[in-house]
Amino acid sequence: MAKIYDTIGPRLARFLLDQPVFFVGTAPLGAEGHVNVSPKGMGGTFAVLGEDRVAYLDYTGSGTETIAHLRENGRVVLMFCAFDGPPSIVRLHGRGRVVLPTDTGFDELRSHFPKERALGQRAVVVVDVRRVSDSCGFSVPLMDVRGDRDLLDRSHERRDPDYFTDYWRTRNATSIDGLPGVPGPDDSAAEPAGGAPAPS
Image (cartoon, rainbow, N blue to C red; front, side, top):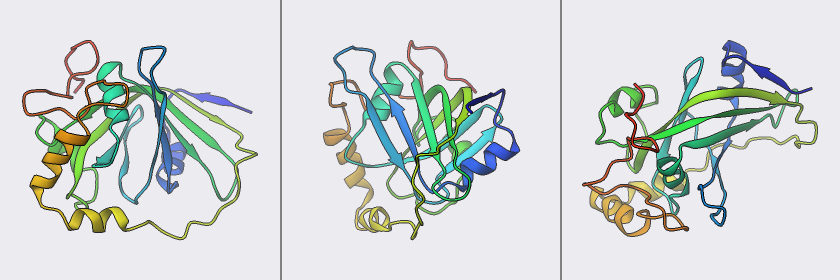
């Protein structure tokens, strides 16, 4: 039976950190815009920062939908499923913001993750969690994890820093709906939607 929790307690935090993959859901405000769901993996790239705050490392990739949606409206949900052991699904609904390597506070946030995999990092996505819930997950299949893929690591290791700057400018600047994506040097993703100061 579904249950709503006041905060992310120790048991839920352990569950979240133990999952090898989670899913990030966002959407633009416009009715004609595309809803987006992104799978996230790679060990050590998700962190529980407190009872109502989590974060994950965002790496350079072909899309920029999550960043664009968070810059526009901040709405986000993270979903975690148990693929072994007792069935469970946990959802974290909240407000997300994008913190770039050039933004104030990035270094402190980055310290919550392993030092490895710095090459290719685009941002830290921080979620201030407003609703924590679980559900049964009875229909989620049992699956064995063989390990992290190393394809992203190997791809990034072949690149120099200028490659990423150019990639963000040419391929990550806008979403598929034309919303602003990865900011340029004169723009900032640190401000949540509406231009209010980013929460500390």
